[in-house]
Length: 167
Image 1: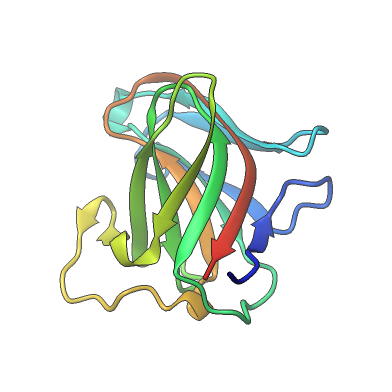
Image 2: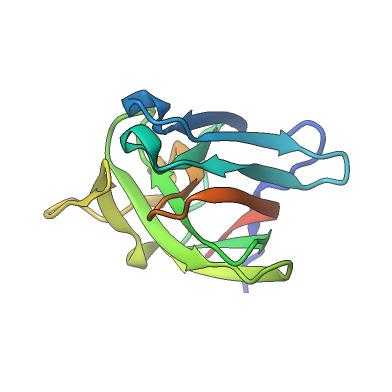
């Protein structure tokens, strides 16, 4: 079996350049942050508000180098809060383009390894599913991220230990 490729392991010199994009882009007041913790974990946390037509918080990791090995799955190791999150992939550097998503549920305060097959990701744009969009070409991935939405108002916290690419 081929060795996994670690995309992010949240050491103090994180491999990805992380950015926050919340519902403030459309008038909402949700807030979030992505911290690289001293214990080698990433923490995506904040509060989702449904006020002012809001309702989402997200973080995106921008790849700082081009991928050179193709893969078919993403493996994430996370400790959640019992809420549903989306793992997002973008194949362009455009912040407003097509996003491929896969939702996953977390267990409250439990570490989990979650396998996300690329073939199961759904192409979306601003929350709407798109048709006739080609599947993800793994070598074209330029951004990954996490999003919380679906009217899950209130505080949230997702610890992330590692993001790996599997053959």
